[in-house]
Length: 59
Image 1 (cartoon, rainbow, N blue to C red):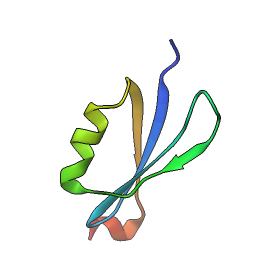
Image 2: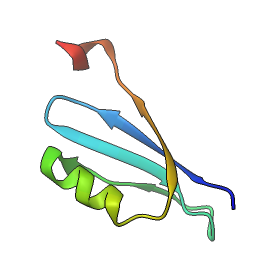
Image 3: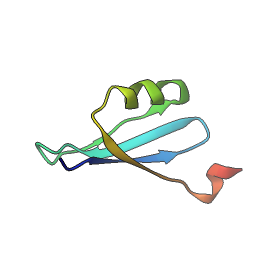
Image 4: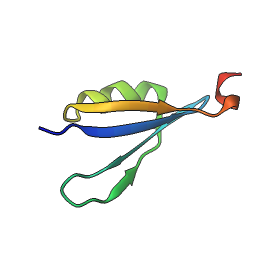
């Protein structure tokens, strides 16, 4: 089984996961608040999660 990859762009107040639907190849995007992220990930199939951030996200 090949794992899906979810890239999460982190910011000060929101997380924006991006992923490709394996069946259709459609790129999906979502905007989640901090309290919404873990429940959303818990309800997804097993995936590889990577994060990205710009320098301003760490201030």
